[in-house]
Image (cartoon, rainbow, N blue to C red; front, side):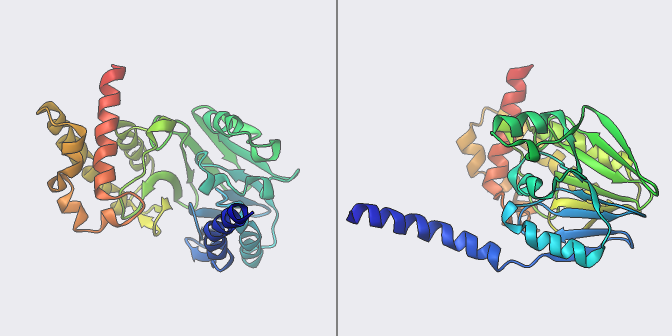
Length: 291
């Protein structure tokens, strides 16, 4: 009995802080344009697009935050939600899907998002009804949203969404503004695909485009344009380490590889300096095996 009570206490002590954190968390709204808003809470940034007669939502964060997110959307507009788009399948971007996916809402995502959510046992209300393969144009009354799939970047099911009239793009986790990216190698991501995806976005938008990243502050064209060379540099340095016969542990300990970017705070986020070095190392080794 004492062991059971201790186990229950341990579980409660581990769960309660996380739950309390979400209970006390405030959803912060940033106006991107007159009709577009970025909602910052816990997990991936949400984009809300208010059209002439409807609302488009991109990503849904965690289920525990859905009521707070709904209240914040209601504060912004009383127009109905008609489309929910997922940038990829991770739970901090899709956790609230079933709380927003009513009979009046169409959930859109790449085919691999459907596959991975299904594999994870998610119910029907959690899953996209409209599945895209490469590109899809969502035609609204007063806007055209381009949903474009990028291959093997953060995962194997990433899409970025470009709001052409408002000139805003939501990049999902293909961009972590001001911090090193999390590249999910176990879900089909890769450093080469990540760089290619960012270049694809940069070639799609223009210098006036406002960028909603998956994580971090609202960004600009220049933020992305200067981020890409960093990744290219890290990839080249680590590729040289591999060519010189260095192993994973040696690359992990080599602080000089990321020193310049560590000084700018890139290693202060979810992905540490050591982790980005090992992630890129692992990705390059996998790419070599796949050739």
